[in-house]
Length: 169
Image (tube, rainbow, N blue to C red; front, side, top):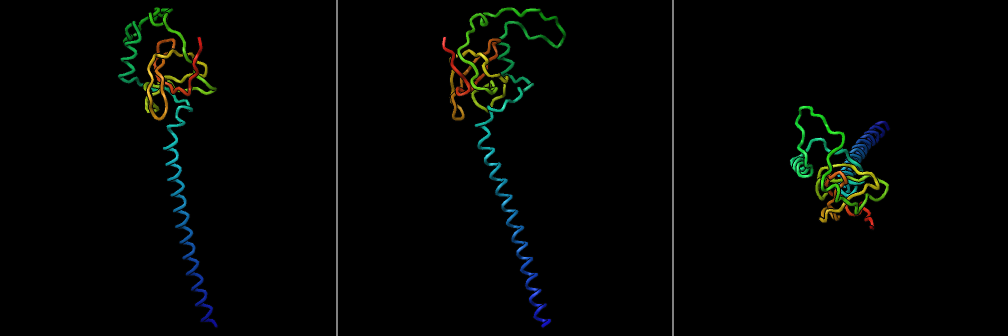
């Protein structure tokens, strides 16, 4: 009987090792599939939710930002040397003609972007109710309609139409 018990014990240990190996492989595959699914969903959904999460504006100016600043401001950009700043900025002709046509809708801040799409840099984060002037240009990007807008201080950018509310005169 001792021989039969040893043989049976040996087979049970072998089956136990095989079952443990099968469980380990199954767990590794399950974790890999769950991780892949999470990454896939994140990559697919990030462009849809990116504008709902306020992002800090990029600190380093790009060439487009510098040229837009040069075009928008009638005064020269100061050099690195310290110069006295006037107590009141000079009035620009565009400031007198500025009239709000839209405002940021909802209860969440939205990103004013350098171009029509979530792949463009954030120029500024705007609070709900911020007044904006429509500049007459729209573009389709990423399944959304983007409007070219200006703030009262002359800053220009793009916001999705679904994040805006039209103001009736």
